[in-house]
Image: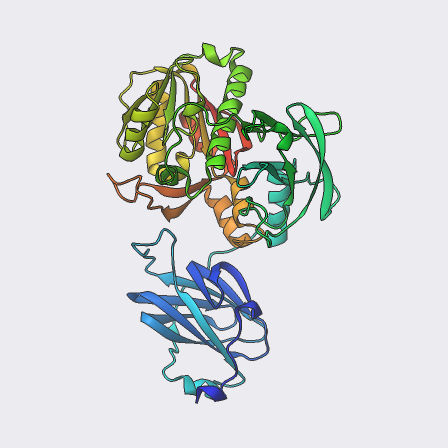
Length: 503
């Protein structure tokens, strides 16, 4: 009987409006709320959804047909939708909103098959189809249109231009990979020539659109709108094959910086032994040693320059410094010993043990996921935390902001990275999440993308999460604890730096 049905509609024939991702060809996972638009004349649709829990409800709303509720059972469920040609959009909500224990993402339902037909009878061969019952669920009102939101994001966060770079040591000689988003006022182009200052020498580089089809670039997390290029670093490599220290900046024709705070600094291995891959994975995921070292050195050098800019003092004259979330010493390994005195704390016992053995000049201690820290009031002139606030739930963030303010001396600074609007643009738009999801993020100000299980939160599973903030939220909420001085966009790859001053 099934052979007489029209073929299943490929996912490319749907408008996946929001709340969906297609990790592999042939199926689409949804979040707890999602939207579809059917682009064809037939008004009768049978949609197969696979539900991962014992029982739940799929709420569906159509502007012409109203709302209906469909009871779901574990496994495959056929859902019947009446799709009027003048109202082809459907909004969906899954309840209850339960996460899978083994998943770090929110998973609503799995969309498997869509059959379309000219009349209801053509779908009977599918067997038992859930007709649903009238319901009262209504999707949240969406005011901002996609193009308007796109323009706002581009002008606000990529408008001045964005520069990202990476040292690739996989081949000899090593290479510098570069990705740029030109300023919004620049004429659109699929390729252009930019200028880089490498150790003060200005070089021209041709950059172009590239979707990584040949696997050439390591910066694969960037959307297709990036312009990419490579520079051989043979001239900066010793006869022993060791890459010399590098300062890399994106500059204009006069040698002036175009992306302040987004420079790349290479300082080799720093001090001490390199951590094993399993240690770096716990703090940075599956990254290469060159990314680990380059990102750590860049963080350190930019922090020292920023400290001098803020205080007028050389970094060596700084008082006690706290690395809040030291991990396996990505940044700490580039400190000069005892200039200034560095303390490091982390909730991860595995990496703290590693630091105690291999970064012995750092005063390290394992701490609880909850305050307080084992330090006196006002003990530190400078506190920094890379990718810590990106992994704490909102209530935990507020508790820790109060605690960091306590241990920072009056007039001292606290430097914390966040995933803000810039990160959301690069990670999810325009190649990923929809304009509606971005709008929801901007409205909420803070988004919890679920727990991330890499072993760091073994003492309290679930505390380690993926969190994003808007800049407006930071200036409004964090100002209760610190003076929010500024945000440096793109300071650490996709993370921006929040500069806070203890009043």
